[in-house]
Image (cartoon, rainbow, N blue to C red; front, side):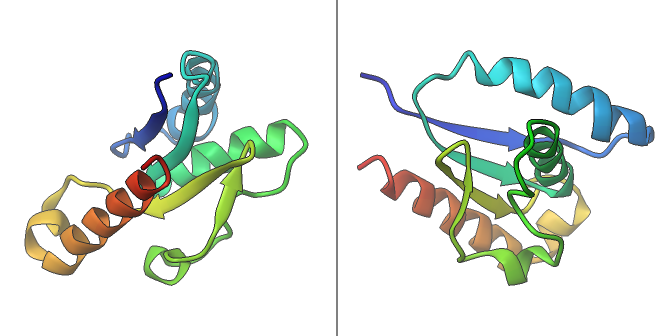
Length: 117
C-alpha cells in the first residue's frame, strides 16, 4: 500500500479570484487522485487559504486559524481526518535570506514523514 503526503505549494498570483476561488476548486478535484493521503503540507498562505476554503465550502470549519505561520506551527490541525501542517512557501526572496524559514520547512517535512514511518 502506498501512503501519500500531499504537498500543496502555490506561488502568489496577481488575481485574488485565481487564488481563493478557482485554485481550490481544481485542488479539491485533485484530492481524489490521492486516496491514501496521511498528511497535508500546506506550504504558504495561498495553500492554507485554499484548504480553508474547501473545508468551508463543505460545511466544515476552518482547518488552520488565521495568524502568523510561526505561531501556528507545532499544533495539531486536521483536514478530512488527516494531519495538516501549516508551513512556509519554499520559494521567493525570503527563502534565501531567512535561514530560520528553511529550518522550519525541514522540520515540518520531517514531522509529516514521521506519520508514515
